[in-house]
Length: 299
Image (cartoon, rainbow, N blue to C red; front, top):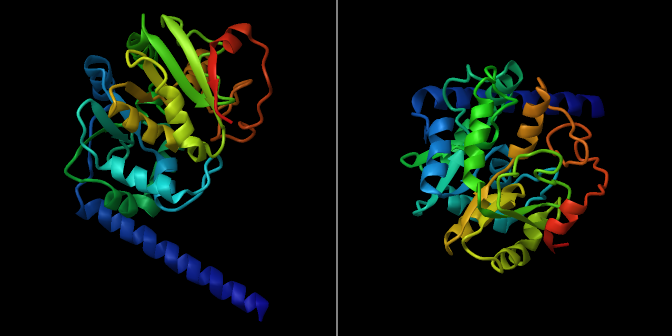
């Protein structure tokens, strides 16, 4: 009886999955995809308008679908904030979603297959989360290297990004083991660097403390945030009180892969990467410059 029950269960699951895939395939052909500006247009917008940036990816969509992540358990307040912000239309703030709802030919085989499979199960859910009349920008703007077949533009795009913080005071709000810019020259053009270290997992549980800590610093500072879905919310809230805040996401890891001329996602020594095997096994570091940059720690 137990084996029979298992067979019936798997059969029902296959039927459910087949129906989901068919439904999403119909949605792809029937409903016009969301309006998403291209990567270079997004980068130009950020640099020229000095706007704040909230980015949505599969992790944020997962929370909005009531799922937990490896680094963020489901939180309903976080879900509600993400649902609010994705349809927002505030001056000096842009909302970014992945530009993956049309042609995927520019991506590597692995990346293209990932998005094909992901959208075959989630396209309809994502469309229901969006304002389909809204102008979105490309969340892949901080993923400039590893997922593209043609990597020849990556160096120029990183140089453009560096213009954003050249001769500016920056405050990096990051997970405790993220260590953005350590071991490379990504932020060498900044006037000064200060860091607020936050929990590597379940950062949203400390959201009010993180926000209060950032608000201690001058609004002329550029706030760069690498904190999963918490960064999406924090960038929005900071923009509303006069900061330029950018959910900078994976740019440091992408820059590391660019410097190494990597052709696949690799672990980076002493840096937390939640999307690859063993990427969360991070050792401590001894770096006086890094230690001196830490001006806040939320535990």
